[in-house]
Amino acid sequence: MAITALTFDLDDTLWNNRPVLERAETGHYQWLSDALAAASPDATNAFMTDYPLSTYQQHRLDVARRFPLKRGDFTWIRERALFELVETYGLPRLRARLWAAHAIAHFLDLRHDLTPYPEVVAMLDTLRRSYRIAAITNGNADLKRLDLAEHFSVMIAAGELHAPKPDPRAFLAALARLRARPSQALHVGDSWREDVLPAQRLGMQVAWIDAKGEGPGVPLPGVHRLTHVRELPTLLTSLTP
Ligand SMILES: [Mg+2]
Image 1 (cartoon, rainbow, N blue to C red):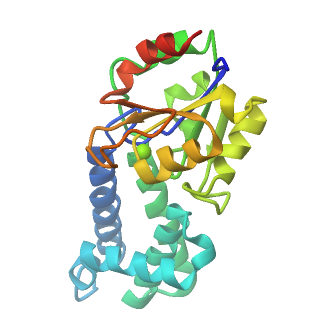
Image 2 (cartoon, protein in one colour):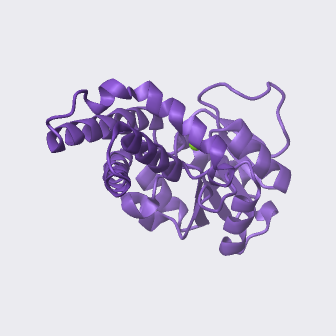
């Protein structure tokens, strides 16, 4: 059956996400520590001295365990962890909440300061003339804050659905809104567990961006292995009857 709809993962599919996350991770935490020091010059220790970045990262895992229903909502988990650490640092509850919210706003600014691979904009521009296109992300990138937004008619933030990939519900929601059956759709993503397996089990075709060399060596029916998203147009041409 001809492919009429495409769904895209974002992080590590349309851009290299690692440097983006590293900058955002250290940047917002350092900002918070500096801002707290400026606001309370009498404090004995800087916030980051009492709670180094590794403590914050560990505390996020603890928050995720205590709030299992929020497990896919990474932004919520971050904010909760920051709030608890700032309160333990000695600030009143309400002020701790405000500082955590400020730090998260800063994190999200840094998180959206990213550059897609150079081929991506022109490629999506061409593809959207022939396909209906959705984005499905587990991450906290908000497409509306990116210049890429105009290329997607549907945007699914799976974490906020409380059904992060590999849960099939994000894919089903995207397909419903694209008015496509699984057999008419192709998913593009980098993760074997979160992208390839769930989409393939639903009966979608999959373009697997296998930059990391994960997954088994044996090919799965309907899964097409690429090394970069720039190879997608050629694959789509080869799949066109
Ligand atoms: Mg990804």
